[in-house]
Image (cartoon, rainbow, N blue to C red; front, side, top):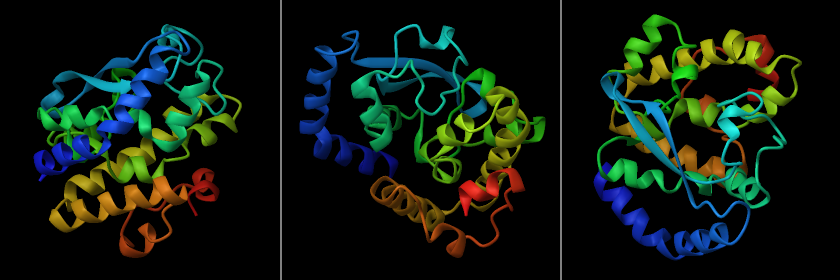
Length: 218
């Protein structure tokens, strides 16, 4: 299913992909694609592929691999690509070659992966990471959350990472074809409406968010 759907999506999105490539080539720093090392299945590192949306040296500036709301490292065109999630489309290639699945725990950088507790790390490493997934859907507004606190790194490590980890554990424990299809639907819904209103109804057994996050996730 991953191969079938990702191959079909690449064909459907090809005119849009070509247009984005041309725009990126002649704007910003002229970079089109951005590769970043992420942790995959069985702790294997791989290069995740995205459209370039930030300054070339952004991982070495400010909060590093964590992105904040209105992050000054984001390029003008990049802001639109990130908001619409079009910057993630090249990861369909990662899905096609088997590095990722369409649905699964979001692949993390080393810094963010090891912010999870050991149990979460071990569980996540048993499945392919996803282009989207329960963590990606629930934390669609993660940049907004981080932009509203004084110490973004501390808030990520102490509040976001533990809850995100519990969501990813829930996925590993409950994954099946029905969940796979529903999460694809919720991903599309989030892109269109900016928030999934049915998620908590159809998955009532999701871990309860801490009070620090409840106002963002309600």
